Length: 232
Image (cartoon, rainbow, N blue to C red; front, side):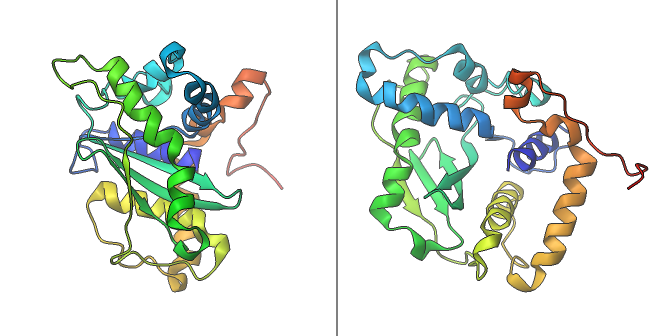
């Protein structure tokens, strides 16, 4: 999922960009996990909580370094796209609409999660994103407010997943279509094999080493990306 989001960020930086709306960004998966990890400290005492520089770098678009957009949330960006792992076994796509103060959720298997449970799973984003904007956006641009983001599950014309093993692919394709401003036509179980092959080829061609997980860099572990000419 991180590799797909890295690929979308790379495409956003191209001239001309593939995306008609430039006021978007694709959240880094490692940043999302760190935000969820810090939520315990945040919810335990907001007045004493301070966002790390790590989050500020993502907020102003200088991180991840390999795909820095230098676009600031709310000032230059209206929509944050994200992949969220819920229930320990399922992926959903998020369109975090900053002007509307709402998280739009695209779920390929909606019956797996109740509305209250989904709202709870998104709580760290619902509370921490407004707090980040209050801390990092000048008050003359945005009036300070820590009000929770609304949660809305989008169901109209959203293709559903008949095979639970495909939820990650549906999530990636939801985000890609939303960013491109296109419909979800063609996203179905009948096309899933071809979609998987095409996505794998795109990831190999466009990101490769830049999709390297941050955890490996932190541990300084070596990773080798196989080349097409490598022998079996």
